[in-house]
Length: 148
Length: 148
DNA sequence: CTCTTATGGTCAAGCAGCTTGACCAATTCG
DNA sequence: CGAATTGGTCAAGCTGCTTGACCATAAGAG
Image (cartoon, rainbow over all chains, first blue to last red; front, side, top):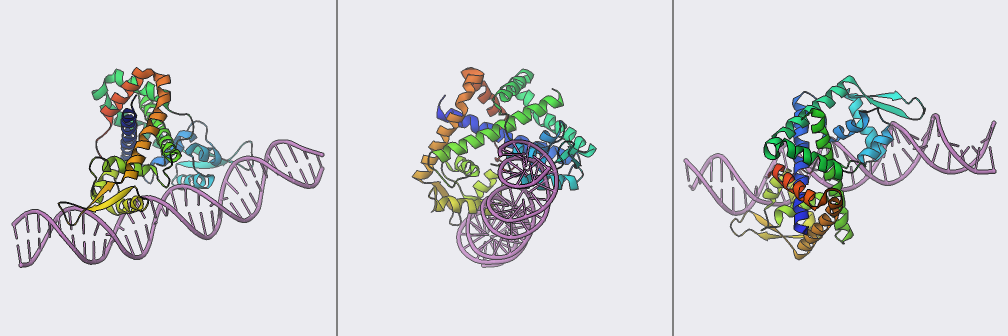
């Protein structure tokens, strides 16, 4: 593959990601969840299964734990998450999503589905499935880096 | 497509984009171009063909023209771009890339190619081509939004 | 069991990149 | 011509992140 093709691929990927982020964010906002930024969505992704500590979150988001702590404070103040004592470590605090947090996560799912829907018209159902498979294969498991 | 599948697709796309951005940035840095942030790459993309005005750039990056102006000032100070009088409008200034700017753009191409190369092992040459085609189809032509 | 070291978390101050607001110069249109 | 628009910069302010310092608990060495 030529360099220029790789650049075109990269540019398209980045443009699609930017557009998608914006659409999901707008969709979440439209569903009545205010005061959120896209970075909060990445936090939810880490918190969703069983909660997480601030340090876990920091590693996942690729920021300092101070930054993660501020983010959690903000989400807690707005009622999306709760800090509970950690069952196994008295130093740590387990950050878990509230019911409102889960509702917001569901809204994000809906918004994502809505944003992706028009792609089926361009690529076909089959094409979208292939795209999803390919992206899952190349996507890293490591920390999400929301900052460009 | 189920909502959860759309979310998985979105998450993979965003993770891949974040990873790719980071790798390209690191590759450009490794090739000796310092003091740059990923956002500058998006500026180059707009400047590359024939240069652009600050206002054009602002629209392309989705920021205010003041922010774009600062960015240009920074790139100019570091020798990547030059401000020339606009040939058709005495108010405007045409921002064009210097030779060093072009060298940096080539470095970005190489870094992109390097970052994408391992994907061929996962998807096959054919698979990468399909991925590129699909992304080009869904990528918006509009402004790139580097801020999450 | 203590002493040292590592780990989870917060407080405080500073910085970088962006925004809003005001303003000037050149252009366009009535 | 005069009014309104457009390209660009200057200045001040905000927000999210960083570095640095610090405390409480935990884990490991002796």
